[in-house]
Image (tube, rainbow, N blue to C red; front, side, top):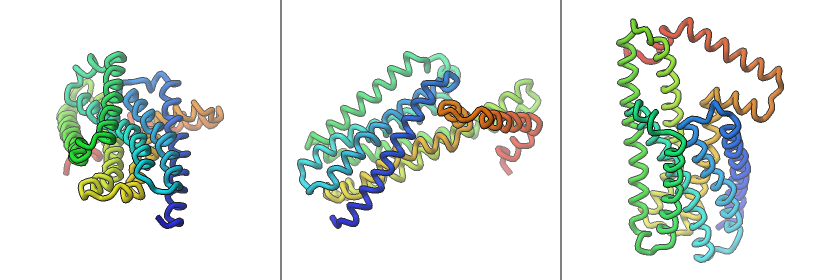
Length: 300
């Protein structure tokens, strides 16, 4: 590999490793220190951030180290085991977050009953165990190496079909609320569906970014490209997913941003200004909720 390419890949991975480690640490810290964020979906986000943290803090520095060493199959085998464990943990945690969202929309009453602390902990533990077992099997077993890319394709398709189902259910819920304008609980339902819409769009961005960044490696595997080709290019794109995930949380969630400002100690004056802006936005929504709802959700 040309020295210029090695330098560029080392810089990109080094910077994203540092930024991703800080970002995912902040996500974990904010959720752990703010009780209002300790909800079902945020526990899955916490698990995903912990998985992304292992990618940024362990796998990426390992990649940069081996990138600057002479190429050898033994070095790649060591790196691949580490990378596979962390990347499969991140990918499967994102998949569990997606399925959790589908369950919440499809069976809302059952979701409230089932998705409680102990059950969520059991699900998260199973996801991590399956991730480790899959990673070890795919990286060390010659028998499973051949069907591995097809399994990864199946996972990508599961993401796509699951989100399509989420989108369809959310769309039906919007139509149902539009038809209940005179209902006593209509105002509450409008606010609830607006929050659900934000969550659904955020999840769409997370899934879309992950699919785009994981596709190159899946393509290289299906094309039977050499390990050296994968090592040079596709692992960098997959690692970038773990760096971008916390950026998406902060960008899309105002509640999370406010909790982040509180956690890192933004000045009192700054918090008052933020709270005032947030309060004014809520009041404006109360006054204009139906007009805004029509513009956002009613079909032409």
